[in-house]
Image (spheres, rainbow, N blue to C red):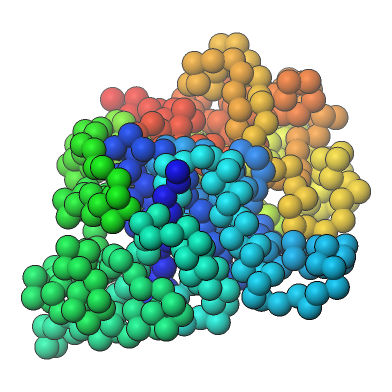
Length: 534
């Protein structure tokens, strides 16, 4: 029988509920239990696919093609699992389903209301995930902050769900903030007390509290929090600011968080196997050397826009005992070739990530050109591949001013063009080429050697592709198409064999990288850096 753990947050947003949920999932998985994690987002958008990265950060894509919240990336990385569209639920998707049912007459003329129709649909999403995954534990994180009007239907649905499941089959974990007043040297518990008061006013008494803090919490303060929030003293946990998110599971394990959760759920505790994670954290804390990787993109003012790319670089760096420092390059500032050269002269590698729109494209072309001409290890992702092909077509293949029809509809040499199946698509949400697709790698290529196999499967999120009319011209000029769709029609990977590592892919390998197992393409990039340093 599945047990349920609901994670809410209070006082302020961005407290790290997702990391707490992912960490608890990691600790339960380390004990041999199966775990599924769901994210409930209160916004009215059906999914984050049409939201600006400045608004929402990265859009994480699952194998089955769902565009989801970036927290699902943390869930996958911490629990080493692949998630599903059922793992992400938004208010928009819930309301869309309910309204669709109402239009079809499924409610038999009843007045459609938040209670019971919206709350019933939310509960149905939990039950659907339970049925699909059949986990020992389902962890559900509720986005937003307690008190937000948007999240109230989710809180009410949880209240009902817990009542229906019965005592001992679910627990509530509330993540709060303990502000530290530096002038008086005090941690203030009142905001947390008030946050729990609001949660209780909605009918939910949390069994466990995770207190985010900049300084250690004394036993006296824990006792005070427990007393005024009506929880056991052993159920108040400290979540201190740390240099790496990968330290959080071990910090919570040291406080026996998973053990306490299992006790509350009437499940016998098991000894966790965290040896490989402990080695991982030790490597993070004690790197043998440091390298710098330039990341050239449009949304460099918000690091969360490229969070999976950054984490993937860290994973690969750890395999070679490197701490990877990121040099953020706003591609708009690299539109001058001399400026691009100046920005790259002190870095060890370059990554050009995905994105949309013409802004900053010329800057990306300049940094890719520099990397190719100076044998600087380079990895292009999605739009990064398209830019690599445009750069090569212009500067090597002799196709002057070659471009993508996304950026110039009337370009003489459209080396990148809209995919055939995308030409009659109306609307933007969920209409791109999304999810996992197979790719055949060219025997003996750098990417085939990096993967160690000929057929791979990677996640996509794009509308444009390499134009087949220009494939032969580009390949004859020396750029190798080293990965293709099974029918050979779509170019999925390109590489410049003369360089140590000049590789670009149409897919998003960053979504499949794991802390304990770096992705082959990121590993190949960092390995090239190491070989150059030798």
